[in-house]
Structure formats: structure tokens, C-alpha cells
Image (cartoon, rainbow, N blue to C red):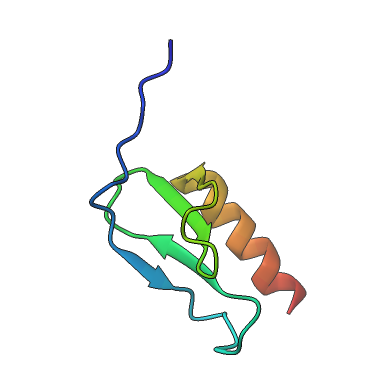
Length: 67
């Protein structure tokens, strides 16, 4: 059985890549060592996606390469 991750005290910050408008608002949490929780800031009760830090870093590098 996988342990349950308690994100009740998680501090969320809006991604610097969010455009600041009504759409495209992504929040990430920095206070989870080795993990990167991600959620839609408009729907704070929606499911949270949790990525490992290494795969998240690879994803960001790929996105930056495409920009």
C-alpha cells in the first residue's frame, strides 16, 4: 500500500509562467522535498498531481527548450 501524502499544510505559489489572467493558472508547492505537487489555482479542491523532482525538472527543461 502506498503512503498517503498529507498536503493540508502545503504552501502554494502561482507559477511564474502563469499569465496572470483568468486562465492558465498553475500553482506548485515548494515545501515537499523530492516531490512537486501541482494544481489548478482556479479549482483549489480539484485533484493534485504529484511529480518526482527529477521528472519535473526534465519536463521543465523540455518546455524551456521549446520556447
